[in-house]
Image (spheres, one colour):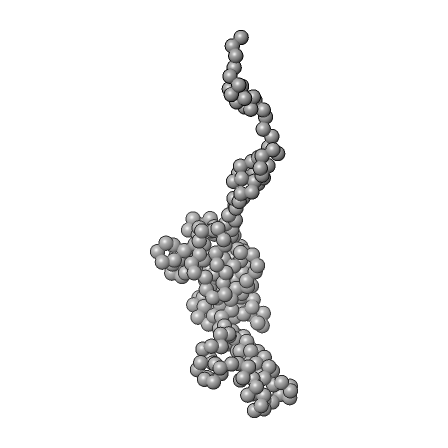
Length: 241
């Protein structure tokens, strides 16, 4: 029988010994593998984009916006009714500001109270023009659609034209005293239909994104996916918008 050199015999014996995973550092798996047993980073999965949004959901948000403007619940929103609502917002803000300055709650503002309130406003109050521009909070002259916590609602709200005096005039197609819900649904629905490029009654994420030519949507407006307006959230992480 032929003799095997000791060096070759050692190699053959080592290759025949089974290597157990627990005998290797880090569990014996590739540190960068997908099993998660190593010390390397685990690949992160990007969140899925929002599911297609039904027209029914869009109409529900428009209806809620209409009901916020129909303060007397008669089925229409008139310009006087809308203007009264905006004025009520302004007076509520004024009353809250007065109450903050009227520290002794006697319904009157003394010079000392006024000076103390002005000092709280900081250096911007030394100039009325600067104070107005630095005030930040401005009473909105529109009624925005309700913002839910769901990302779908946030995306849809960027497609809906907020209720304003201009919208009331433009959407009131029969030129009567007030804007009806059906007229508003038709007006806002035209925006939905223009975004629904495949006309399937749904808006998917690609349809909610702006076109590549300057981010302008089919209605000539900046559609969801472009730079968000103030106070609006950015596009979902990993969505690619």
